[in-house]
Length: 455
Image 1 (cartoon, helix red, strand yellow):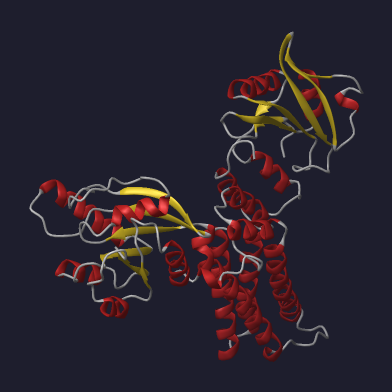
Image 2 (tube, helix red, strand yellow; image 1 turned 90 degrees about the vertical axis):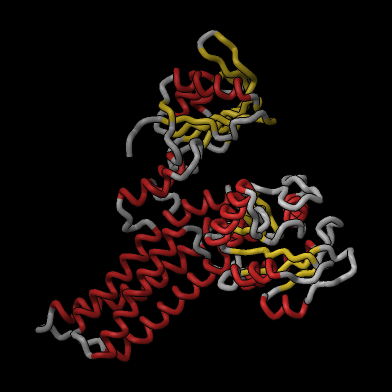
């Protein structure tokens, strides 16, 4: 750990009620004292931890703002170091000007995620908890926030460490028996090891399943709205986004490009693309839009297939049905405010979920939300259980599961116990990489490179 004192703006780069400049390091309090003069009371250098002072911020002789300084003394701080947070008025210029004064006083600019990285290196938080900080910041709904907070508070790490401890106990017994065959050490039998390996494997598989079910909540999914021209795709996009995101006219082929928007449907984050109507056309510009729609459909994780409920189904509708058969999909029978003409039984036979709504009237959104949740299996997601928050963590769990599968297979086939021990130790290594106890510098750097400056 370097002894440098770092500083950064910890609030968004936008006007607001307050702006916070965060300082951390061995000279954080002295650095803050060089730019902050309390109005009455003891100087900042004599301030106890978890105490605040009101005063003025200055850069040399130039007064910059009135502010509140909050002092945290090591090790009882976010980073484990001395920390000072200067809360000034939240103008973009003022906040940056206060930061410049702090840097002029000897601090160095913090790198992305450096405050949380120092917290990790100082043992205040593990790597899984560090990742949950960003998950909490980027949470788009209640369930995502709850899952991230539970991980931040150690629920995931506790379960992972419990699994690792069970395996480590087996590995220790195996290693002792293998390394010291002449000593009077009782051999651990396969009957004792198999239940441990299988129980830990089942626990890890449950954690991975929860992550896969909850990805729509925690990470979001790529969704696409498809259908033939003039079935109301753009109207549906506008209904979901809550404002006029796509142009809507009675002219078929109005949408020729892919229009994208991030939409929160209940607790589910959708990156929705409104596409051109899929149909045969000799118009070159329309054809480009149709090709874009088909390419977007290929990589979509969720398809909202829109049909005109007020008209009989056509060959173009049949093509839409065929295009999305291998996808997670919801049929949207639009224009419910008009007399029904479409074959709803055929639609229901082709889709796991069918929703009848009127996008122009804004009706049916709640039913669509429930249908999407069922298709994405988010109704099975429990944010209060141990939850993974990143693909890195999932990869660690999957590798541990694979190693345990090999250990079980080795035991059942009569392979020597030292080979079984190697598999079990690899599983432990993957789990400790998840928590950060055995993560390489490259892994740690990659995790914190995704953070924003100031966190």
